[in-house]
Length: 326
Image (cartoon, rainbow, N blue to C red):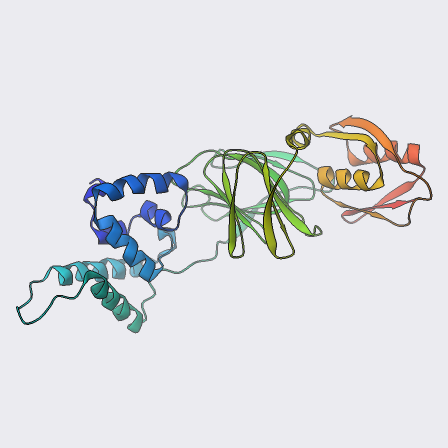
């Protein structure tokens, strides 16, 4: 049966409709806006949804789902009952509210958010970088010192991953299952697009960089949408949108490290960006530091050897840090 013929009760048991009520993804929103013009039950179901604050259907327990079906069926029968001339029929929204109150009093929790359990899928070392293909066909470039975890039943009833570190995602489109990248502070939701996420524990900020398509980035209570060429920056408890140089992302993908008359601060930020670690100075240089060079897919020690040779410093690796001494 087409959604244009669904009752409010049936709509509230439809996963796509629940995603629409939660304002994501865009494909569901466009579809249900057209259905709403054909079926007045959509508006009723939306009103009931707002009162119940439902969550996506995959979080339902089977018995709770059954109770919802029974309760909504009772709700519709109550609404359609004929009444005597001396008794006015209650407005639909009050009947709905009464049904919800009954559920609350009997302690039946219809929907609740269930934390996703993650399992490690891939992990990289300090100077490692891997290209991966996820079970749903999504391509991933996992940068150094990073860990990618997949939600249980990934590509079956969810496409959620948890990232520590940095990775570039080229997401396989799937309108039924949005792709979600969670980090310690943000959640990025897409259908099919290409973007990079950076969330290293030692970093003071998290970055979501969009290459193509469109994504929504949520951090605490704030949500922003990105278009190609835009970047979300989360720091200090706040998220903002900015732009970035798209050539920088292309160089990252090509593993091309470029220094153009770079001073010490630029050298440090470039090394941290490409190799996913912290670079610290054990002491300040006494003179001017400057370096120009291009490295194509080179290990960190090769790059450091070249820079240190021309600028007279030594370096050492300690845990996930590089320490420079002049």
